[in-house]
Length: 141
Image (tube, rainbow, N blue to C red):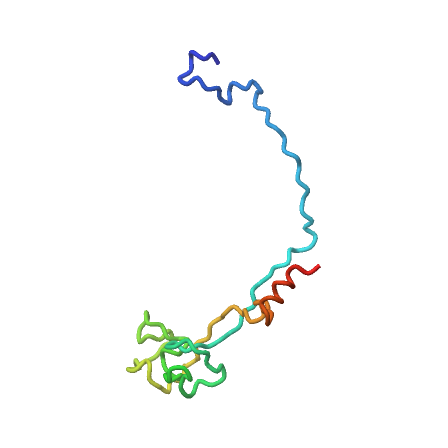
């Protein structure tokens, strides 16, 4: 192209005269796919927590009260089927609503609410008892 036919004076990709040749990139070595890549899944554990205070509840027993706040464990708010967005606030088919959702009831469908939490108990590195010793251990030869 001639410069006076252009709107701008900068040279563009059409001025290279290469005819569309591109530089070839070096071929990368393919990854060995004969063995699957190891997947590191975080360890999880199933726990039951109080909906009022968040204290850990014993997984076996649904009787009694929470040790942290004293709220009844066998109550609608502690149940796994409790859902405030559905009829009678229960995802199971119940015929009549329970008036006190936080009070003890005798529902046969009750299941203690369980959730999955990441188990980080062994993931944290052990701290040395002395800070100076820990610092010196970093630079051992």
